[in-house]
Image (cartoon, rainbow, N blue to C red):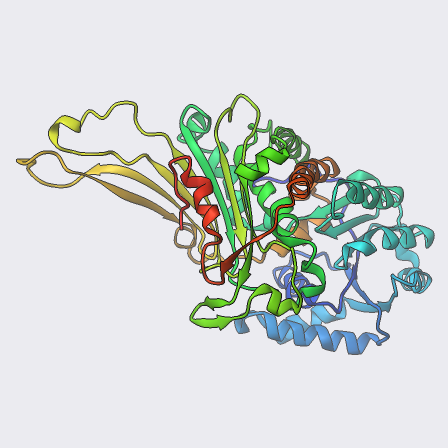
Length: 494
């Protein structure tokens, strides 16, 4: 974060990584840990123990990690001596979390480290979070100085999230539980806090008096991409809105925290999430759109429809658009439009802040014409920049009237901080986990507040039997999503 939050304890000395042979670990976690190692940010005594269901020895697993580093890191980051030293940190222990076996072997491998801080990172299916936590507890690995990190999602609705949190909470205290939403590790997401609270220019206007509406778009060009077993039955609302988009909304709309400590920031996010207006059956008819892509073209290549990829008809939405309201003083009456989908024309994550027009056009009588209202576009990916659109006078002698034109002020973060390596989001999250800083992790009451709002939408969809509308792959979703915002006199920023 901009400054470090409150640490829950000392640094972990052993990092146990469940799911160490899986895609996320090989593609993101081990490359991130290697980068931290190469930059001298990992303590010399830190040991990393990978765990998976398959039996293999330490040397074979180190070879797998070596291959992952070579495949997923740029060539200029690979230093042979650095790789060798990093691999020396790594050990392996086979654990079948589903069968509940291997924990005693892990305890034996840990040896006298059992009495010192241990961090357990779960890169596993969410259904295994509770059983793993209980297995660690039974093997006396969940010590007072131990902590646990879990990838989203936490459950599939409010009730199941409470069950997962209860099982994990039975083994680990809440201040030792780190719930991960990797979006919070992105530099530009954290920069939203700096934009709002480090600049007097914006915060006085960050309210219903000056802002007309807010748009949040998270668009993907990919389809199922091997996630068939997970995605079908989950859908865009649970997969993207419940976590990434609501976290973005919370940071954009929350009240100023007293500091950037983990408690202060997360307290304000929870208050904001609890202020989201629940949707009824009548609300979802007018304020929500479900979509599912059919065959089309993305990036110049033909792609199959969702049902074709799946092999069966499905009611799962691959697109969702929502009109949300926050019932508090700051945002009274301001609509927040959320949009996310797969097989969209381009990959992007962005926030649009649309300001209200000036109350009176003093240039109308000198031929200036209509004034465009100011807007701010915050691009999170693939580019990282902030653009502010303002009105300016065109150069000239104005013999035929004053001519005004909308111009863009562009702050490119990659240009402004040229020469600084753009870190993988997981580098920050892993380092904060190792050091015990919870600021960028999601608290239990945050998760439950998110699920309460999402469940209201899912329940309302069920009451009206809302089915997904088809949209062609490579388009911006169903036409009804365009109507959702254009009924209010606005347009999506495409």
